[in-house]
Image (cartoon, rainbow, N blue to C red; front, side, top):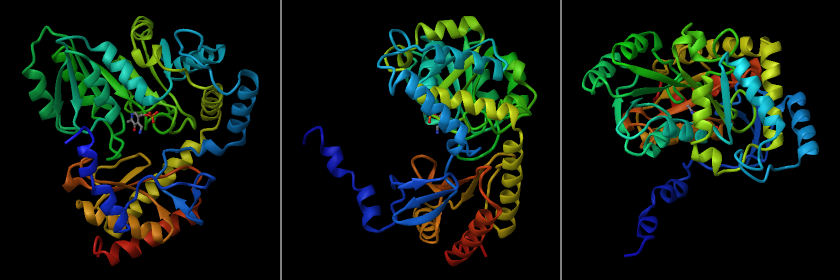
Length: 396
Ligand code: PMP
């Protein structure tokens, strides 16, 4: 027995590869957004978070190239020391203005923003309250909050949340952390019901807008704007790796809170800052979102159409609503892999989500759409999903 024994015993991935149904780590050799090249074939991508298709907008690409020429390929250090550019400050000011918040702080990934933001805010013996379906990076931030007391409630279940809150020490500080749009389920946080509970039990609210920014709300600020409740949420975070066509993330909120996170968050202080190209790409993407609402409008049109059509075909799409994330619940790990494989063989790339990422009876194919999908792409996807769904007995 040695430290690697667990690695030798890990055979689940190998077995799936041998059975030809392993869906993960498949390389793309080309990508124009809605179409990708994999294993020598052109495939329709319905598994990307590139919701507005901006990764291939020539203006975003040009901005990234220009920043690389001006500043180089890396910042070679952390924000805290040599790695802060005037471009980072420009982006933080832009995000604060765009999100209608006093201040913003950027990190090199969204995962790091949650890790640093949450671990910094919640101190020893203080409470952190999570929706069970919150993103893994929120869980990572929670685990890194040393000595914090962690409580969880059933996904989007307000009775469960109140049960949890009512059992906590009333005077102890509490932070409720939820995804604004849940990344697998495609449903939206029940903020209107969380707010009175937060008030009643003395808790502040932190919302992860990773799948909301550029997607929901009149200005694309996310679920809080869509619900008309922004001013009641103290802290929001988001990522650059979805609608904003780059990599990185931010937390935004009151200046004094952001200043505190800035001087205490380990992932910010001890890790290199976002590259010039990544930073400039976000700046350009926000400018496009602010001036060209047609991309968000097209995304909503597509999402509504696909939700309607999947449902009409007989797929179980759960509670997905008003977002481009539409889960097709299969509720069985093996059948989910098989459905994924058949979709892929027919020319569609989706995401297979099985246990332990979700409970085995929640296994699903996560589909997500972008404003650059053509009507032809979408019709093809529906035709293939119907054919394969019937073949495997998932739909009638
Ligand atoms: N929060 C949510 C809800 C996410 O879905 C993700 C990424 N999938 C993240 C945070 C982390 O973002 P990033 O990819 O920028 O690390």
